[in-house]
Image 1 (cartoon, rainbow, N blue to C red):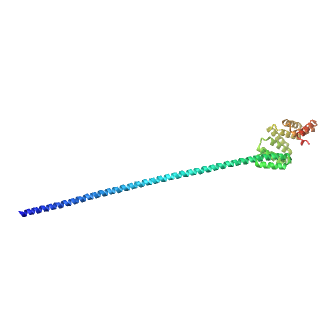
Image 2: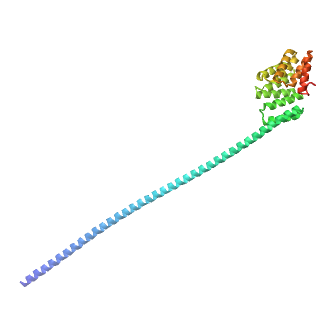
Image 3: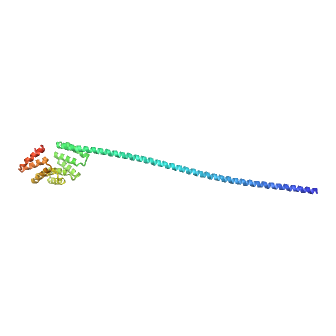
Length: 290
């Protein structure tokens, strides 16, 4: 009986020990599972955190790179704007310098032109003075310089032509008068003086044509009428010659040469009125009708 109880008790103890061992093993296993699950969760969270960290770093890098690009773009824009402003400033400076230079050149040109006009006028005046004084070579030199200053000077060519006429160089005189007419086709004086040059060369028809043109262009030119009157004298047309001398005197009552020419013609046709014309001519200019 006692042995049975002992065996029963021992069996119960063994069962209890086994149950306790089994329970401990299950608990340990449960704990290990929990630990593994915790470890897995921690790893997952750590991996997720690392992934988030990397994503954040990538985003930060992108933001930083975008910021650098914006800064570089702004710096480039500012540099470009500064370069454009500097280029504009230099361009405006160059343009201002160009304008100043142009104005200076224009002023210098005007000054030189004014000096040339003054010099030209003085030369023509001196040429006229020298020619009247009989200094024809000096007059020609004066007119040469005047023509150099103003190659389109009709008056200088006419003046030089007159000096050549007085020297007896009718070909050069004719060339100068023709150039004066080319420069100014409406110059009655140039036609009148060229008529004299043609007459001096014996070409009376051409001379008459020029005198007629001079009178057409300048109907109040006493000089042209007097010159044509002289030509009519050479052609033997005394009536027309007298008529032209009369018109020359009517247009210029102080034309000593016209009185002298008319006086000579009147005396040549036995008209005593020529003496009065001679007297009037000498009164006006003692150097004529000697």
